[in-house]
Length: 454
Image (tube, rainbow, N blue to C red; front, side, top):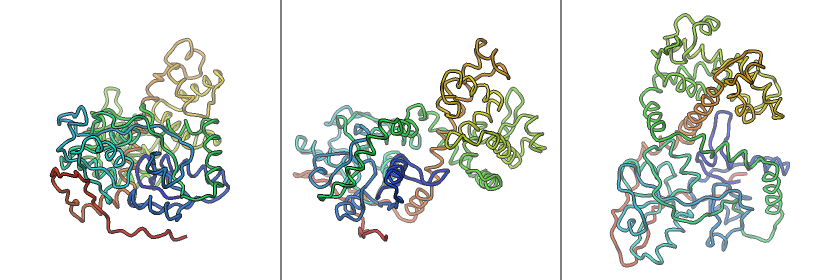
């Protein structure tokens, strides 16, 4: 399988490889009883070339089914519907229709369905012009937008929802397309065996709810930050996190945790402020209570190293206390809820969940019943009594938001991309000049598209 690095597609997460497309592909490999072998393309052009030359069995990378691609490739059953959104920078004039794009600096990825859409529009709007980049990923395009280097780009709606947490300055102006479907891309040919297996597989995961669960995990609006929250988080990632990153990493190593999870907890607790103090008396970067600090052997809650290690130790304790049958990722979400509201109250909520005929080992079921702990009718029937049950639900949701951003921004692939970009200047984008043909500019990559090493 060939794919691309992106938070909506594939990246190295807290437990190893992650991403919506990766998880579905892994399930498909299990369905077939084979090992998934992965190749990461550096560009959309490379991905298309590799599949066209039959160097990969299929591509899973958020690819839209378009008339142009149908002439060259075969597609699986569609698994998601999206619209293409014109993206601009907050604080600049919002375009309202296609005529506002004339004379503006527009950039999309070469070989993408966004480029196909712009070519369709140019049949009617001859003056429409744009650039196509072969060596820039979506994050690079959005960075150009936020830095004012270009005016607009085009993203699929599901991508936009994810990237707004990382680039809070971007906004959607209007859709450039009607609903489009995303599907896996298969090489041209006559052998239908693998394609038929993919069709059966998508029918299965659609029927049993697996596909819906993955969509909700990666794309649910409930897991996205608003503009103010995202902008503040990105600012604190730049200005505050570097002071404590080494400590988070050290504590995570001591307790076999992901440092990004600890950092996300720390941000939710104190916004990474070592001197934070709440009206109820909890203190420090991880906002430990006096009793918890004492249990964890922490003498000074305002010492960031001690606080982070104490928080890691406490989280590990509640994580290990959970029943062995609870698996990931639910186990982490339960541990976070217990970290916030207390293990006893979490157990009360799990008991109530079971009484309602739901699964007490699934976070999505339990989080729906946690708020009942604030209602006398229900908490009077529990062992540990009243609790502000809505708070752990919000707590877990927020930490998941922060963890998603931290996981992508600190992934090896993303760090490598950032390092490479810092060593070279941005590709020169020619200023817009209206030409009779209004042809698009191609910013090509010198990378050759070699077959994978098997």
